[in-house]
Image 1 (cartoon, helix red, strand yellow):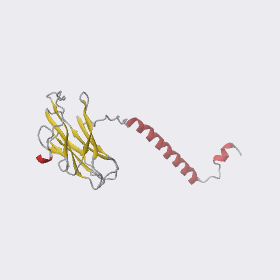
Image 2: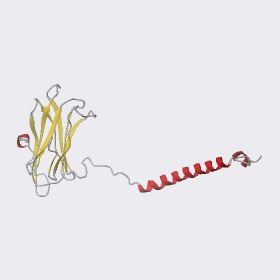
Image 3: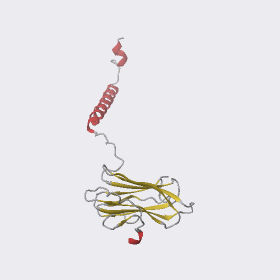
Length: 198
């Protein structure tokens, strides 16, 4: 008996030889396909803090796992309010995520965000509104952050306390000039109701 007789000799079934050869070819083909696909797959680019189409990102967060329904509202130079039920105004302002606390939400995170997709000149208003507290204790702390892409940077970041149901608070107002930059000394929080303009 030689070394080759162990692998297969004269007594091996032809069907087992064909099965072994077919299995080898399938595994080899799979390895070749995977090898070739690695060159075709583009690496996923690392996302910025601000989504690609967004020029200015507005975020509101409140305590996770609570039932508070806080709404983020915004209005651009066109004067069209954007918030719950009105998700976009032209190409510029969009409510990207509406969070209703625990209602229809599998996530514990309480988070809403809005994007400004163009740097149109004019004033922008950002408000928050406590739609309902659903028997949670008041006040509810809401962190709001407004961040611009590139040279704009952070426009505003703070925590606001909503003390009663249906309360609407102007978080920040700011103005962009013709070049899409924040006008110096234009950032303030003088109250302007957006809900009354729906």
